[in-house]
Length: 327
Image 1 (tube, rainbow, N blue to C red):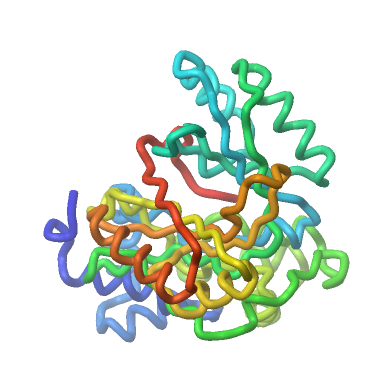
Image 2 (image 1 turned 90 degrees about the vertical axis):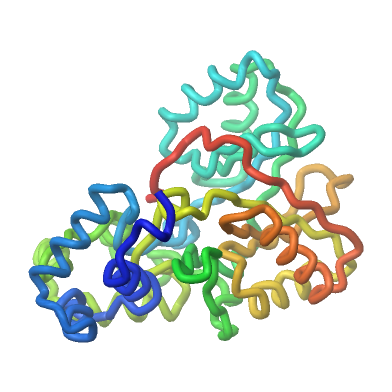
């Protein structure tokens, strides 16, 4: 499927769900009024978009840091004949996400892993990779997530989202610091029900009014606990079939990541990292999605110029070893 097969009204719906999903107990009612269609028609169209796999979910991503966890991107050199075994093992690990074969000249498998603390993370990486005869890897710890907004402009065919606020550069508070139940954060990370009042069940379970829950969700969004609010689309289903990981080497890595996050709307993720290998110099990480590799190359070149990077590399995805949504 590509964009030409999606009706104009469904494109409008997708853009509303991605970029303007209301903070309201009845978000679908507001969208239906804006589009001048009935709420029933809107809900039916959304259910069909979910059924067809175009929409992956509607909801929000809750920062792993708010749950008191550590995360890292791991680059591993896994023997070719062990990749299928690794794929099967990874499918059973809920803390392992974003698992791709990429075209790096040395490290062929790149994945994200989370754990309760850094020591546990290191131990889990070592134990996991030992199962596939891999002892050559780099751990790129997540130091700060400056941007996480996986939005696809279905008109232009490229990932795109503004990030013109400095709030995303602040430290993410934990559930304990916020004085809220971790279980509530977990439930907010699940896809919302496609119903007239999608927050009602969660609010009742936690003895809150819907308006109170919405107010809390907005507060968590403002504090960077909640990211990527709204719809998450399956890029491949709308013709956005390419993704490139852009890694930068610069003299001031923190400033570089800030400039990238604030000035490159095509970037869906921007993460400042630190490595267990002092020889690894590429510590500003970003992701670009597009219908063509050439678009990604052009954006990467723009990133390099915007940030005055010493060097950069683009790692294209060759295979997704663990499709799905991140909870």
